[in-house]
Image (cartoon, rainbow, N blue to C red):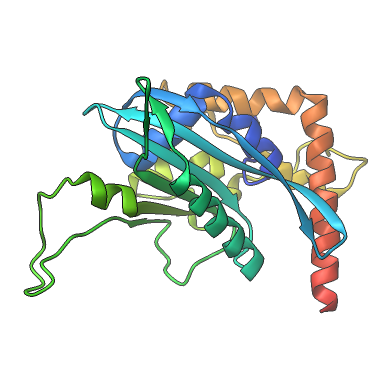
Length: 254
């Protein structure tokens, strides 16, 4: 089955705005079911190099876990690790930290979870990396197992890093298996071109194996398939690729 490649902002945005798809993504990363998910989409326009305007999509949602705890989840698709990219998300984190959210008619500061889908490789080859909050006795170094304190939870956050290019077809780990929708080995080089026969745009389509479709991932697969019929989404994708080409060309000149 042909599906849109969610490594691109346009298709990632379309996918994650579907409640069922967002739940699938977050539940896969956290390893637990969600009782409730309330999205807070965040869109912003950035100025690149003083002359190029590009639309950047960040996703935020308030979730309620099975234990009844509310948290704020931030998800981003990050293509580069330049100073401007890191600075942008640090500011986004700071904004999320200072904002209160209405939970059952009460303003609260929620614990934050950050999920980063990376379009580049880190030094570690592990496809998915978890950075959790570990508490220890400062004097002895002994790990403190049971210390669920609101102050600590609200002043620190756990992060998850998914290295898209390290997700492979022969993956054995559960995260990579459930995130085969990001597998770049599935790029359909024989697909119809999305724009005037330009081969560069062909990377926007994945040939997803039917035998990998399950009851759990069926909805997100259907969403990524439907977007290929959305003319507005395709046009935005083409503009995104054109912009990326301009940015790369400018970067190569430096």
